[in-house]
View 1 (cartoon, rainbow, N blue to C red):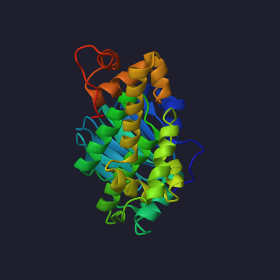
View 2 (view 1 turned 30 degrees about the vertical axis):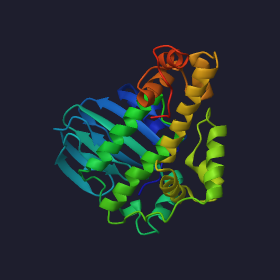
View 3 (view 1 turned 60 degrees about the vertical axis):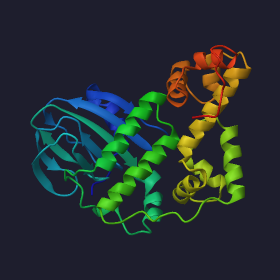
Length: 305
């Protein structure tokens, strides 16, 4: 491995000569860096950076020569193909054709503890056999599509979304690498469920993290996330969105707050973001919901879908 630079993966791409190639960049709380680049053929080598980076090739069909930390390779890229680059390694890669890549960078500072706990120390990305290989994983591709879609829908990925997606993708990478994530045992204690609900309701307007929620239950984030799902039937991120929609419905029905004010009250950056999320959950717009619950169209408000 090489001595890493002081820059993160996201900073190196967005602050230097590579910035012109960046199409999308999102970095929620330093948990994950999401990046999409469109580049001409040529050298795409980079210095040693502290993150492990997962790449998805959106076009395929190009010859690629280089080293991502697992030895020299010479291969033809595949559309939808996945590749992993090692942390703290100066990668080398030359592509013969123009290409479009999505990448997901995991900060080792943020994720090493989760990996160690989730696999009981059985797996290390310091010597992963995946580096520089093109491999296929429908589960990871589906998780990436979902992450990008939700990031666009919500305007920016929340910390809960980033942590949930990160755990899902790392679990699959560990499985491919031969170390399963250990399963959760049982749900949350009644007092922990109550504390979590109270905490989430009190912080609807904020970007809460899995770490903060886990602290309410006096558990590690990894075990908390799985125990939460067993107790509530859905992951923390989905439950938090359901609480936000419940509150939005209440404010639409009982107040004259503007849609922008309601959006801020339930943690969204604009009325447009609120409208996208609200329609997905209620199958009608916030304005239509407000008119309906105030007696028009014979609509009878019910439980959240």
